[in-house]
Length: 174
Image (cartoon, rainbow, N blue to C red; front, side, top):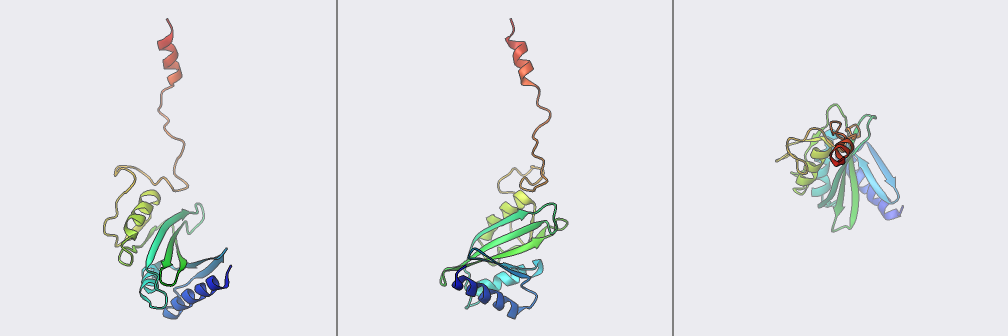
């Protein structure tokens, strides 16, 4: 890891800790990338700090995704990739969410571009975003049941398909 990325991690983490000592649960540095684990109840406020603070200037949310760690709890990890264009730095915010209550605050008020990213996570993982302006499916039909990127989603397919080989043999015999 480069020294500048390590310094970046320290700047962001220490800034968030100085704002609220409970806002940073953990700092993970791996292969030059920094991830700051934020408790769920501080997510939106920490994101606002990252965006609005003149020292940080994380003005772009470039990606948001989710990981299902089933059967472990907390089951889900939401990962937000932030970029500071003026400072040419990036950092990740990670939030761990229980499978029993998969709800977090929406980041649409902070970065309007989070709208479709959060809708995709909702559609495929079933995470609900409190305060989202239009939380509905974006990829799958509205009547779809379940969340296909969850690790416990059934993948065996349809079971009521008739044996087409027998139908073919019967129709092709003279």
